[in-house]
Amino acid sequence: MKNLRFTSAVTLCILLSLIIVSPQYRGVETAGIEVGPYLQNVTDTSITIMWKTGAETTSNSVEWGTSMELGNTTMGDAGGVWHEVKMEGLEPSTAYLYRVRSDNTESNIYSFHTSVGKGEPFTFVAYGDSRGVWDNWQHASLVARGISDAQPHFVINTGDMVNQGSSEEAWLSFLQVSDFMHNTTLFPAVGNHDMPVSAFTTYFSLPGNEEWYSFEYGDAHFIVLNSVMPDVLSLGQFIWLMKHLHTDAQWTIAVFHYPPYSSGKHGNTTLLQFLWAPFLERGGVDLVLTGHDHIYEHIYVHDTTYIVTGGGGAPLYDVGKSDWTVMSTSAYHYVRIDVNVSAIRVTACMYDGEPIEQFDVPPNNEKEGIYSAVASFVSHGY
Image (cartoon, rainbow, N blue to C red):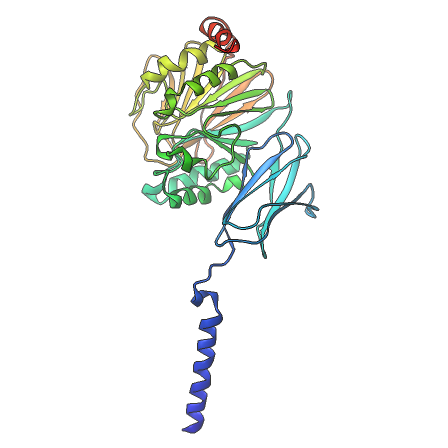
């Protein structure tokens, strides 16, 4: 009996020591990587990498190089659970490998590609309205997998990535589902469900003021706008838009959430038909990418191609047809866009890659009219 009591006492002491020492019982979080790493704001010579850890860290870095040995390290800030490291001095149009490290935790090795130069072809994917909380992100995951299989140089999201922009849980779910972002930069436009802007910009590192911005890639100039009230009425954004329509790029592509033209459930955004569309069309914009209606629609109006791509995971809407509709369908999809100096080819794809339609975008050579008058007005600083 005495030996039994002694054995029981020893066993109890061991269990108590495990409870005291083990982080599982002490409630101490580990600094494991919970989200990411994911790529942001790629240029020809730089890229930003972001990730989230489960607890604050004392050391964060990115190891990178052009071979599996990596060989280069860029240090980030210590502390916090969100980490953002910008690597600069990279070579244009070059493939790199990388991994991130936080304290004693490291990620898998992933890859990225710096921006191509003028005269070099490239491929990007556009899609929108991913917010998948309604089905636990099942359809959004299917679309994300299709995008990953397409292996684009970068991805554009036309907004409404989440159902509630103020919910960190929603953003974490979107980032975890969008695992193509390990190897591909995402350039998002803000949608009405992504608001407030302060929440939207927490999870991305974008050019300019991050709310509206532009970037160059190959022979294309991209303009990303905030079409959500009240920011859509911003005079500052309008003047900025007029200045950024003046470009010597071969192609100009505009991206925002609300569609000026749509035959889906929400229909046309009449305000944008008057506020932006005339300037985009007369300003030489070749392609306008929008979302909001959960459909795919190819529109051609006033010598300009518009695409509504809102089949990224949210519940689908029925489609209609208008005088400017070329093709429309209700489907989970993404849009693959191949760009070179002489052509933009659009291939709308089902989430599994099956083509919906394919066409070449007619160039918009319109550079006169309202655009010239407003551009002259803005350039003189009025």
